[in-house]
Length: 308
Length: 308
Image (cartoon, rainbow over all chains, first blue to last red):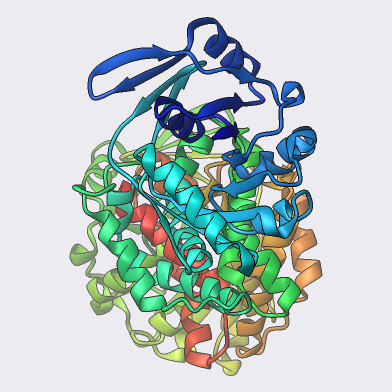
């Protein structure tokens, strides 16, 4: 299958690499010039299980993508999605399927501005990967993903996409609850990412604090109020318990969430507007109160103003 | 006048020193042993306007105070007030006036547990001082204070206290709005102290952030809702503008608030429960919502758990 990875950072590179290894015709598209140049000159360097190899996969800047693929997998940062879609709109053919695997909320609405609803597929991925530098990623751990069509007539196409991904070892499952899973994952990010960033701590430390149990339930309650309006029922207590399981150091406990890495460690802007900020914004539109998410969003933006 | 300073840190030492210089019979009472010992051995070292002197003023631990004074000035940290009152209750005679100058909200209720209402006087001070180390303080800048009786029959006594303080250069004014001034000052602390601590920035930086105008008004709105129940009317916009005047570097702008010094710089517990935490607690008792102050209080306690 002819597949373009739009946003070939850590996760996009993982997907691109695994799909390429299985014999798909993969193109990596990314806006970071040094990264694209390094991949084209030396191949994509993959560190995995203590071994290292350089894999020849073509890479281009978004403006230089010209061939229409069968499938585009969107893997930009949230704030880069719209720019990417604008740049690559000439390769989005009438039959090009678009699978959106970004973290965060509200991306379906953005994709729908550029892609016919029948070609839009939403997914949630549990794979991880790290970007070491230009053209260089590390792959650790196991993962899987869920995929769902948006247009009810496109179930078979969603299952086909799952097959292609699974043949490459990505363990894709067709699901009828992807929107639920997106919200559920957003709750994880909306508690652990934003609070660990504000408090400057890792997930295990956050879990050990006396106030944490109370804070996360307040945040999730507001997520669930907004989610209702998208037909998603989030059980606050069950969602909270799911998050609490992550504090375990044998899980991700010792890990600093990506938002902490972005803002505190690398002084980059965060995805807050697509997590707590999305809930805050939508709550305002819906006329419901979301003060905890309002304040957390404000504090993260304030910290961005200080550090970026 | 026979005056005991209960809590002889930076501010208590300033008051004790100035009252002693005017000829009052001053006793410094403090729970920090090294401080008491240093004062008794070498005198209280005062650095002021580039000169330094050591002043002989007696100092004792709270449990060692035995003589009943005419006036006790309470100057502990908020969380030390109850312990101090318990320790010195034997020197609180039937005619001993007690002037409470602590920062924060709710102290009147605590003092009332130990002192007859007619002997309780509340005040707000705008003086500043710094504690360099045991027995050593620096005095900078100018100041003044407001004093008010709680019992309506005690106006003359409040004015007398003002006279004694003013004769010592402390510029005390009798006021009928001390409770308003306490709330007003608590709004300053409840915005600048807690937010600069959470965001790890100074007052000038905080003032420059895009979200600040919105954040402080949300906090003050909740303060004003609770203040109403204490007969105090806080105009949110006017209070916010008063706080915004402090961002000016020619005012306190470059300064890190005391809570930042306590928690971020010295890893000590903060007075949050007597500022935002008081509003949060009282709102709950009153059945009104104060989510911004709830969350700020939770976050500061979480940060205490991480750093103290």
